[in-house]
Image (cartoon, rainbow, N blue to C red; front, side, top):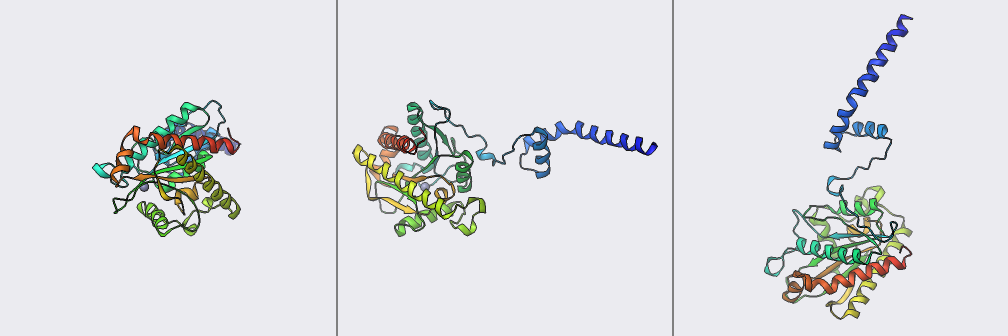
Length: 296
Ligand SMILES: [Zn+2]
């Protein structure tokens, strides 16, 4: 009997101790979310909720509201950012600033129409890896993904918009080099062998993703041609194996909005008015693509 009482006393002390220290542990967790897996698990069990291990940079993504709460979601990805400035254009413009400005303008146009929900991978000058961008597309369950970039070339005459959709084999050596450069910039290699297993799609799902990507690219280019106000490259639809397109697990394109190393393109892309025709084309194509795929 005495032994039983002693055991009971010890149990009460242990449980009481756990209860007393629990709030302190929770506070710690908030300060350093990824510190210790064990701590995270205790917190998760106690709250009875699901804990998403989001990297800090993508922990606070705002999703704009649409007319319907279940409206489809497009994730717009302003290329580069933070330590990675991207290309430098005429007059010293930086790709990372122009991609962000354009992404915000596309979001504003879509929010005004109210048919789709919109999120940005970054809404400031944050450094994001390609992993984090693709990860965000998967975690948000985005229905469409648009990565915005600006081209640069040693030849100052190169100009016009290019839309890249996902493919295993690049359409030109230039397209292949671009996909590699984008990956190398953040030290990543586009290869299934290097990807975590949860990134990999079945062959069939990947083919579907590629064909939906190509369809979306053609839609953008048809509208751009019809507008007559968006200068395109001679072969504006290109294919390449871009990391963010492959591992985002959602249809999408990588848009090169023009060459900031070209005087005319550079001027067009540096001002809100200059970007407006392309912004409008993109917003219309996004809304139309999502509507056609049954979301809106
Ligand atoms: Zn870029």
